[in-house]
Amino acid sequence: MTGGTPVLGNILSISDYNKLQLMLACNNTVKLTTIIFCYWGVKKPH
Image (cartoon, rainbow, N blue to C red):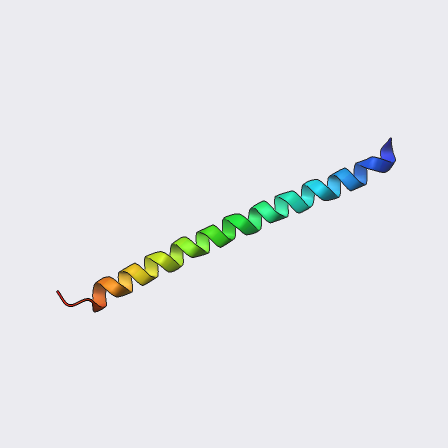
């Protein structure tokens, strides 16, 4: 059943790729939120 292996491999690689994209998106969102909070903290009248 070697014919099914490349398809399974492609599905797994796509899944890993999606997980990587999701992690990057979450990481960027956290960075953006941190930047916004820092900026707001600086601009906010004390």
